Structure formats: structure tokens, C-alpha cells
Length: 136
Ligand SMILES: [Zn+2]
Image (cartoon, rainbow, N blue to C red; front, side):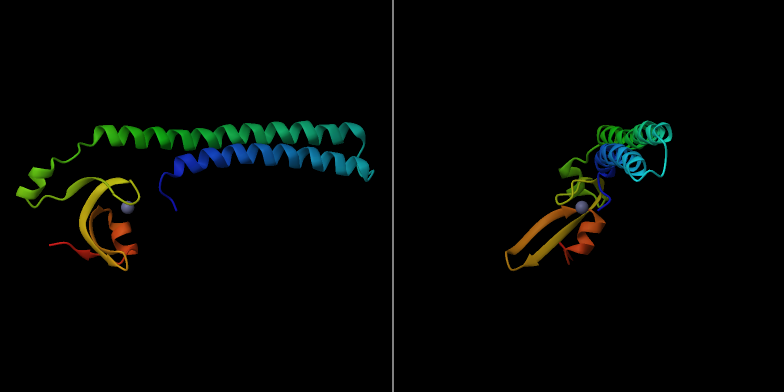
């Protein structure tokens, strides 16, 4: 749910901008049509509200984009393990989870279900959520 959150935050920023602009214009038009405000305050609500949502979406997008770039850097900077070294020693395996793709410490997991028995290198979260057993 929270993996690769940066991408989701970027989509959320775009949605926030679109929904905010539409809501601002809708509110201004509605208040003017119902004769609750004059034309100038109605226009101020339409334009001002749109600008506020547009600027807030910039900040939101920036947060998501920063997260995406940090994840990309993390993938490049954290060294991937050499598989033979892993077999020789008992070091924690670091790399990409074979289910969610997150780069973290991995566990050798045995998955037994109606599809059969499979062995995967998984992060702790995927290990827990898939009812895995340790692979010996
Ligand atoms: Zn995972």
C-alpha cells in the first residue's frame, strides 16, 4: 500500500489540482447563480481558489517526485549482493524483493500453496503476508 509512495503522491497532486480547480469554479458559479455573492467575489473564488489548489499541487508533486528520485538513488547506491557470497556466508541478503520489488534485506522464503511449492527471496513484509516458511 505504501510501497513506491512517491509515484502515488505525484498522481494525487495532479488529481488534487484538477479537483480543486473544478471545485473552486463550481463554488464561484454556484454562489453567483444563487445570488449569494456579487460577480466580483464570485470571480475571486473561481480564480483565487484555482490558484491556491494549483500551488498546493506543486508542493505535493514536489514531495512525491523527491521520494521517487531518492528511491532511484537508493537502488543505485546500495550494493547488490553477489549470490555466491551469500551462499558461502550467512550474511543478510540485500536486493530486490521478488514480489513487491522493494530494495531491502531479504529472506529466503518457501511458499507452499495450491500452485505448488516455490522458493523466492522476499522482504519481511511480503514474507509475513504470504504465509511463507523459511527455506532451508
Ligand atoms: Zn516484498
